[in-house]
Amino acid sequence: MDHLSGGLVRALDLIRAWPIWLLFAIATSLTVLVTVPAFRSVLPLNYPMPQFLAVAAWIFFLARIANPATHATISYLQYRRDARYYLPTPISYQCQWSVSRQSDGSYITQLTIRCMVKNRSAEPLYLVRARLVKPRVASQPSWVPVLVRDFPGSAFASAPVSGAYVTPGSTAAIAVMFLVRGAIRRGTRPLKAIIEFEDAEGKRERLRVGLERTGND
Image (cartoon, rainbow, N blue to C red):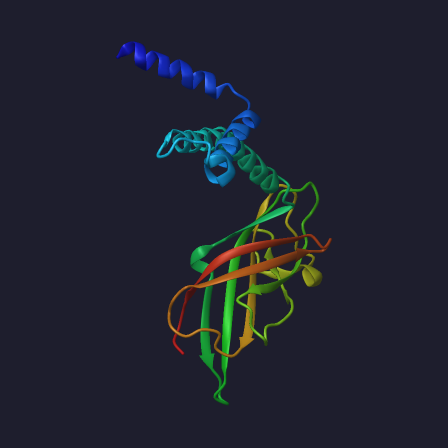
């Protein structure tokens, strides 16, 4: 039994050292052999070994490419994250939505988002405006101003009016509010939203956030 186990381990180590292209070629050849009628007819009747070998070859191939593919995906995501000019992070308990009824019987939906934004660049960050990407509503405003609190304890102000900015390498609080005509949703469930921010140089970043319901219709 020990000799059998040792031989199996050595065989697996040998197969693991094969290049990926060779495993793919073997798996493809075995698949063609068992699926194409012209090739399948040369096999003995009820002979399952080629099917087993084809499945095993595909398992070995997928196992070999899984690790490099995972590392490549992680490296790409890390690169995308490091390449971002600025990084907004929502303050979840300060991201809310509500619906209010007006005197004329119509409804207004208000979405309020507060974030901490990290300036990852070596230049001052002037956040200028934001737009609501999701949910999509016909009457949504195209862009609204972004309010920045550049120093702790200071008031929120917009960059074009006050010149507020986020210093290089630091973090500041920002706020944005959307007023949409109509009730975009009923009930009290959280609202999933996507907000796109734009700075004075036209660089854009998107934020996915869940908004908690406040108030009553």
